Amino acid sequence: MSVMQNFLCGRTVSLTEDERAHLEQLVSEIRRLPARTTLVDRNEALRASTMLVEGFMVRFIEDDGGRRQVVAFHVPGDFVDLHGFPLQRLDHSLATLTEAEVALVPHAALERLLIEAPDLGRKLWFSTLLDAAMHREWLFRLGRLEGPGRVAHFLAETDARLRPIGLSDGRNFALPVNQADLAEIVGITSIHVNRVLRTLREDGIAIIRRGGVEILDFDRLIRLAQFDPTYLYLKSPTSTGPRRGTE
Amino acid sequence: MSVMQNFLCGRTVSLTEDERAHLEQLVSEIRRLPARTTLVDRNEALRASTMLVEGFMVRFIEDDGGRRQVVAFHVPGDFVDLHGFPLQRLDHSLATLTEAEVALVPHAALERLLIEAPDLGRKLWFSTLLDAAMHREWLFRLGRLEGPGRVAHFLAETDARLRPIGLSDGRNFALPVNQADLAEIVGITSIHVNRVLRTLREDGIAIIRRGGVEILDFDRLIRLAQFDPTYLYLKSPTSTGPRRGTE
DNA sequence: CGGACTCTTGAAATTATTCAATCGGGGTGG
DNA sequence: CCACCCCGATTGAATAATTTCAAGAGTCCG
Image (cartoon, rainbow over all chains, first blue to last red; front, top):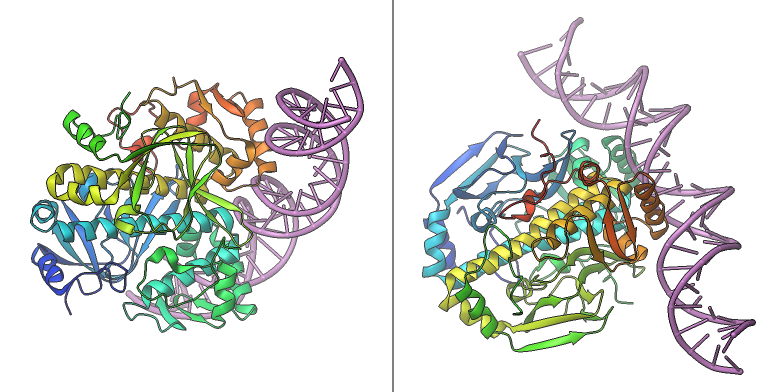
């Protein structure tokens, strides 16, 4: 399977076969990384961007006690630090969660691509804006939802992102994160995550164990999360949760 | 003063005079808007993007009870919904906070610009990534800080953004938001905002009243906020708060 | 078997929300 | 001019959500 196979997969803007081939020509190196490895530290200068081919990664910011707030969760097909190309240096750190395979695309090659293929360039821009849209939805999650809603929202989003790349059937999917990881994602303590997971389980909504998720009641999950997949810019939203802010 | 005067002002990537002139040629219309007016609703298709020339605006997402989470706060010089150009439709709403002057740039004109001036195009991309960087820092704010820290963080950020455009001297600046607005920004109730503002006042850190902010102890504000302006990509960071996550 | 790590639970303390009132200033109509 | 009203700010008290501290239990693996 090609390295760019899952990039922009199922989105309102996606790649043509030519564009996919074009992008793949730019890959300078494919690398296999162990789990829980930091690739890039906050403030580090970058000369290449990273396409995640297999595995899961996170981007995070640390507080003055070294505790992490995860600002993005990445699945295969994500151009994890494409924004490092225009920005030059990252304002956050980047690490693997699981063992991962990544493809590196040198910024010099992207530079040329913008001139040669402006249409493709705009799709790259689109891709970084998709990340921004997810950031916004995460702000909603942290700002307006409490524990159970936050976890439910993360599960609903992750399911929606894994479906187009064939990693979720809408009921079960692999999610190799422990409770401490979840805590860093949804902004609560790992102890509280534990209690939240119990209520989700006891309420028959979802069962989350290290390694995987089983969604028991999709509708209630969506409602609890107030999840509306608009912001994922999917071609055909797999879930049809109630729209927000339209009453 | 020109309508693009403050765009990317003081950033690591900024405009040349030619580029500024080029952008201004693309403006199709300048409009004056009353305070508290919604310009764009979530999911609405866009044909032009909005440069904020004067006044303050917010972008927000509503929950199922219609309560807002503000996802971005905009100051003069911000290209408020430039991301609407590649994205086509917005995943959030856009409204004025105060009376405002905006300049509209049709997407068709931006389309041409990408071909004619790819360098400038990349700066536009950079500008949207700056917004994403701010989203990430807001995620840190909501995920890792509690009441007082969140408010302090917002004040520190706003000061840092207002300085390059001459709207803050680092001690006093106009901030025409009430406590309910602040609540929607920092993700706590307006009643709790009230109590937080009192403690900031009583601790001699800052005085916030509708209309303006007076910073009494900048160092303590920065520390409380764990504020590090890295993510604003300023040419010369005005504040030198302690770096995070580097010990 | 002994760690090391993760998950789990309890209890107390802290933080934030909710509900209910009150206060205060700026307008407005009588 | 003044009573009235509205909106935002403020406060108190009860409740709920979350964190912190402390301790066990389960599991995997060398």
